[in-house]
Image (cartoon, rainbow, N blue to C red):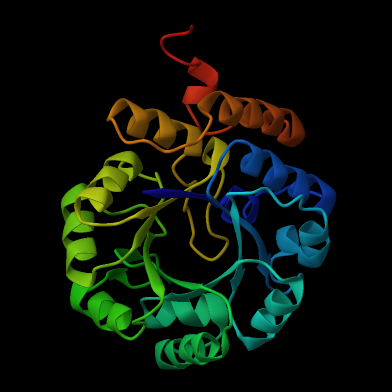
Length: 283
């Protein structure tokens, strides 16, 4: 089982405050030092669309590579992939939505165009690739998503690591387990919008997933999904998994310190619970 912290990308892209690339690089470095096996460091998107992700190349330049950590970057199109390839990160994360309207809002393309675009990027990519299917369980514009549509999409990307995303946090464990089993998806990306995110993460593992996305402090949301609140908090998920007897290899105390640091950087309480409650037993 592998954890991917998406805080530097998915976590920060919905914050009202735009953090400087040097601060975002420091977050990546702190997460790697805490033992995260994968960190989604940046998103190669237009700064006028997502200003929080501006200066991706500067963030990458500030990363101090840590043995045992795989660094990924998200792209939406071929132009983003060109920037990704020049930055020399370890893994490319290509994303598309499971619905027509979400793709139009998020990537200015139809579902068919977005699918073909992902296939072109995968065909030309020299790096290991993840395909994240957003709004796999529910869309803010089209409502419930037919599992058959998601299964058909996932089958198009044979050879890539497929991650199913509950982008707006509407799924329940039964649905997650069933869709992971049906698609044989390698991973799950859950939001805790309706307080089902942690149960869904366990259900994804039961369904056969090997990769779980989470965001330190519970940061996150989606600028193109109204009312979508944060991801599951990495430290909360680590606490849950470790107490379930599932080894993560991540230093929970270090994660707590990162959330405490982020609280001072952002000037507000974060969504995560464990960093406020502390470890148990305290010793």
